[in-house]
Amino acid sequence: MAGLWRWKAAQFAERKWWQQYLKNKDVSEYLVWKKAYWNTLIDKTKPYLQIKPSDVLLDAGCGPAGIFMAFPNHQITAFDPLLDHYEEELNHFSKSQYPQVEFVTSSIEDFKAHTQYDVIFCMNAINHVQHIGQSIDILIHALKPNGTLLITIDAHNMSFFKTLFRLLPGDILHPHQYDLNEYELMIRTRNCTMLHALKLKHEFFFDHYMLIARKNA
Image (cartoon, rainbow, N blue to C red; front, side, top):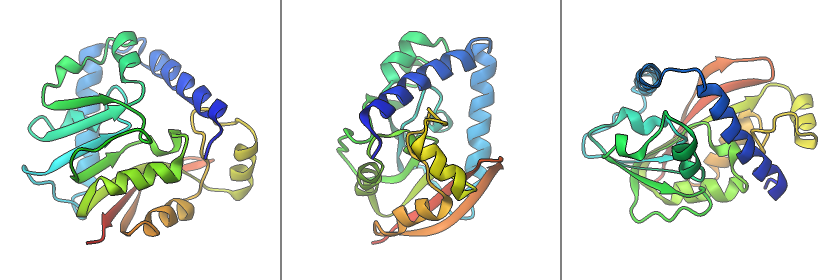
């Protein structure tokens, strides 16, 4: 669990990050680029996931330009605690642009699923939450048996810096600091089978992974 002050600081920093990041980006060009980015990422999951037209999808912690963009013909729910701020503060996001999406303003901890989903995406969001164990429990509870969970994470490469970042706010956007084995263990011990850890990007402190897991029947 992250302290409340650290989580609130991370949420505030997230809003400011998006404002700064998108400030000089053309709206149309950015949205085209972002949709292409998501489609490329989805292509990388095809050895482990085949999304059917009838699948019901969830984008947890979607942000203003989430993977919901890549599914114009699916039934999809997308939620984030900062959605109202994003719509007010960013020209790049409007709920009306995505009539196929049911948007919900909610944290993962407070999200109330009214159905179970075939596929749940949690892209760059799980280490932004306040209660990470509770959040993973909620996502897996919302997943159908044999459904697929896809989570992207920043996983520490060195235990020294992992310990340091836990003690000091060296990474203010992310209240939680874990390595790959710790993230995989959180999933495997919650009635899921790990299918693959796909490395997306290498950096000095962190490697960026997509974890793909299937909920046991």
